[in-house]
Length: 415
Image (tube, rainbow, N blue to C red; front, side, top):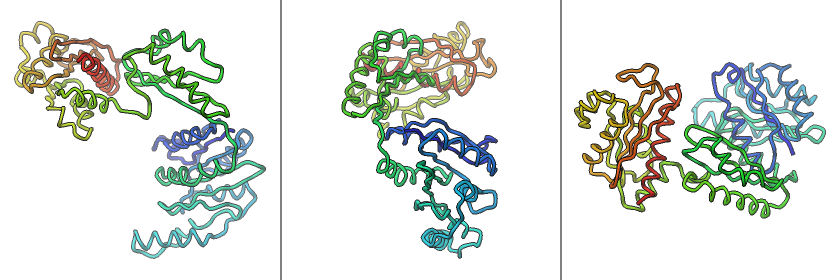
């Protein structure tokens, strides 16, 4: 069974907003065994919408449309649907009462004349009640195909998808089962991972597919299987996942839908009754920010010093001026002193230190943009790594944060 998603709105096509609706809808459809064949974005223009509907109908069983359901003249989705279905708009008393109630309760004013248009729906449509807004969802059928029109406001759309659309699809259509399991890895690139797990990938059952999904600092390995027996599919996917986990060892961080990197660090430190702190330069406090986003972080996180300027490294973190002059502020030696001194100052078990050049210019150092040194001081030693993390400032910083967490995790596991 296939679905298509059509998002309507000039604001998407000019880059004014990001289309997050399609991603959410696709995820929810995939959970119930409906494959999304294509996602399209079209202008608030009658002919473009009609063409998109016609093309989608030729390929898909379910067509889900978002946007263009407002009360103003530029919101033409309902009128265009009527043209496509050779239908007319009629007033829904249920929707009108709901819109009036919203105006009275939340705005304290009578219903504006223009907003009465929200109660107009195609005569053949089943109205999907939108409890969070004034634009209803609509469920229509044509030649065995289902068309669902939803408001473009994300939280309104999400509620309608989960409470109305998905349950009805499940009830009305027979679908195959789709099973996914995603393994999250840190510290190894896509090609190296492929080489490491080739013995598993080359011998996967025909029903099981493996996809590599790289992101900043990590690669997700997604195993997928489709069929009619959910128990058999789950068992098959779990067996292959276990083989991959065994081959990768501590490169595996967790599974999607499980813990975040900061929650894993929190669990490890709490379990071992150990503490940490951070001395950050190029990461600007982002490591500390992620750590302290966890409830109860004060039990294991003692503090952070953001020593962005060279003089702060010298005056606050007590990094030797001689070390900086001899090796440069962006160096392994400075990272080691930052981590060691921070650990001693805060009396923590672990300390992370970052120093690097996130660009766009070289700043106080001759280090190339993207060069980052990360040190982790533990009760037994200090480890330091040098990374080259590209040329885009925001990506360099986030990659450095991810690398720091992975280094810290490996050090904690030694105790």
